[in-house]
Length: 229
Image (tube, rainbow, N blue to C red; front, side, top):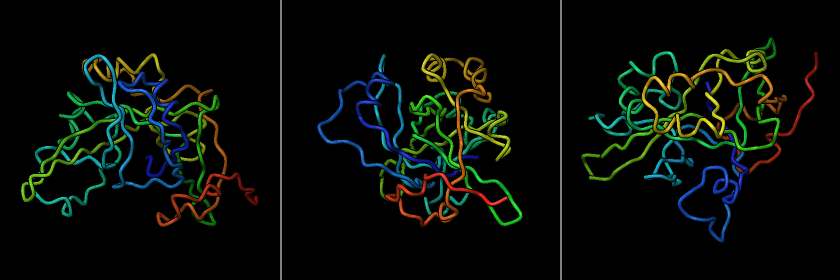
């Protein structure tokens, strides 16, 4: 699974990679080093023949959800590639509402005798990681307020990811964006596979990351740590 990630990219990098509908704003994005589920994240959504950035809750709430948001206790921040087309929580979004989720890197945890050891994954080429996502719009019946939410699609790991965990996010290359966003179910399904072995790199980081309360502004969370063997 992917339950925590980072944002160090700039608006200009988003604009250039995703060919957004509007140019970069004068102010830039603030770095975030411990993005957790249910917080607001950036998503890239198709808009006619281009794309736009839409802030969304990380943790999908399907449009048919009839209870309150507080009663949404299911973990919907990840959707498994093997079941995304059938699971009621995700299947409608998989058919109709796919998006791109940018990340600078993400964390995974390895079980060790001394506890869970976090690792930080980034692209070897230093570019933005683009994760296959799904989105939905849910309306709170009590207030009439619309909530946009999203989830990351996860799949089996490649070799480098399997050294730490048994899952990894579906990582898309720029040539795949259009196919994921606008392709039919068969086209989208063909992309839900492990990343090539040369895409990612990883290193161990502080166990302070194990706490979701670790500061979102603490850059030291991604610093490489030495593990005693």
